[in-house]
Amino acid sequence: MPDLMNTIGIWLAAFFTFCIFSFLYRDNPFYKLAEQIFVGLSAGYGLIYVVYSTIVPNLFAKLSQDFSGNLILLIPFALGLMMLTRIYPKTQWISRYPISIVIGTSAAISVMRSLKTDLLLQVGATIINPFQGSTASEISGNLLVIIGTLCGVYFFYFSKKQEGLAKIPSKIGVYFLMVSFGATFGYTVMARISLLIGRLEFLLKDWLHIIN
Amino acid sequence: MSVNTSSHTERRIVFLIIFLAVMVPLIFPIGWGSEVSPIARMSYDLIDETPAGKYGLISFDYEASTITELQPMAVAQIEHAWSKGQKIIATALWPQGPQMAEASFAEAKRNPAYADKEYGVDYVNLGYKVGGIVTLQAMGSSIRDVYPKDSSGKNWDDLPMLKGIRTLKDLAWVSSLSSGVPGLKEWVMIAHDVHNVPVTGGTTAVSAPGFLPYVNDQKQLHGLLGGLKAASEYEMLIDKKGPATTKMDAQSVAHIVILLLITLGNITAFRRKRAKANLTGGQNA
Image (tube, rainbow over all chains, first blue to last red):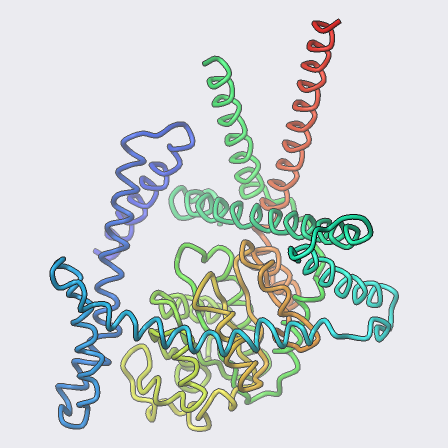
């Protein structure tokens, strides 16, 4: 029985893979069918998973085991219920309170952490002695980091018109940005091809058994 | 109308060529080698230099859609850590992470060298927790409070290898295999930047450029594995011809074909532009 279910699963997966690939020819009902099923399944799976992996063990299980010892859990429970008031337009305003708490705490945590991670330590990583490297490539790498950072940041300085000599670092900054966009594009191509490799590997290995 | 039809036909030809460029090397592998980059080696060195008996944490922050890129990294890191006698704790910030962890451990145990690795002694799968950065912050105070049970419902106290673990500071390294948010960035923010625990990780290729600035003098990241190429580099470093290595032929051929198509497209566009300019010039004269 498990073997049969496995075989059916593989054939279904192959069918839906072809349905999605068919969009490359043109939009068609098979593609739409696969797309809608994917969206529906993802939403359903996500909902059930969160209920059983988060709400049941963290709330209901604890409350049913020791209600008086877990009274504090009633606060997030109430906030969660308040979120559901968005369903009716007349009670929508109630959901603003839990949303404001979520946004407030998330922003406070993120601002503090981001300031250190994305600003202070990143700036610290640029304050380096360019000649500390032992090889020529390390020294040139350090110089590129310093020049690239300064010129890249200068490109986004808009308080004064960039003309004459002041235009030079901005121009250099643009070149660094273009190299960065090129690298990002290269990585994106690699990611997309990897997805295609994954699907083709499934078709050739699990479905057709052509490769090992 | 005719231009549109021609453009559609051209696109379909391009899709077909890319399809074949990926499929043919999968059926008939070429065996092209590739070089190991310094940032992939940094990631390898972090695990390699950690003494036996220490604990590493792998966070499975991805879902089935990105297993092609991230699963080979997970399996390679697990095998590498086990080969060095380290113990592995698996966690997840994404709902499907525990299943990804389970599949990775099962794959690693298929290697006869690690078939005797025991659950609860050599590795544990603590499962998924919602909350992202807030969860990690709480793990800084007590991992046990965040994960009183593992993914199968076993109590923390019934898992012998967790006896020496209290907070994130008890870990020798953390690796987040991440395909989005929450993921590697949150681990850098909390595990490294707050608790000073060495962090490495792997991402899908599309997110890799965004993480490269964290591989810096401050050692916010100890190396980075970006996409399938980096996964194959890691496999090369542990001397394994794994799934990433075998797929790199298809990746390389596809890239060559794309480069040729871009060149061809530019030449065609340039010739059309010149022909148009000549035509306009002739009419003006």
